[in-house]
Amino acid sequence: MTDFFQLMANFGDTIYNYLTNMGNFFDQIMVWLQTWWIKMKLMVAIEFLKVSYLVATSLLDEIGFSALFSQLFNLLPSELRYWGVLFKVPEGMAIYVNCATTALVMRMSR
Image 1 (cartoon, rainbow, N blue to C red):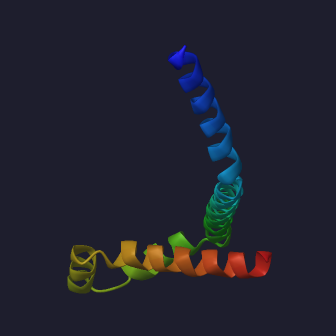
Image 2 (image 1 turned 180 degrees about the vertical axis):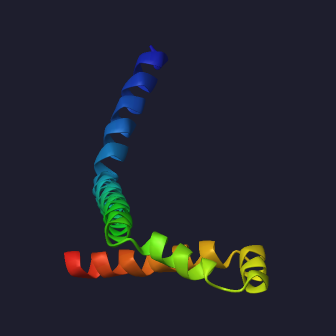
């Protein structure tokens, strides 16, 4: 018989805890929704960055920048070319130009 009364007391305690923590549930739902919203905004921003990078690389290929830069780099004296290749100047310039063109595409797309 005492088990039954203990069960009823536990049931009542559960309902009481549920009702007293209702505000906490709302706070947790709002935190979850805001976290989800921020995550979606970051995912969209990353996808926008990927698309902008692809547009920038195709734009640079279309105007022939890499061919022009390699031709100009090959016109340098051999010692300068050696040091340029040693310090990876062509790769660095390609990265810099890709970043600048991606920034241009992103600015013009907004």
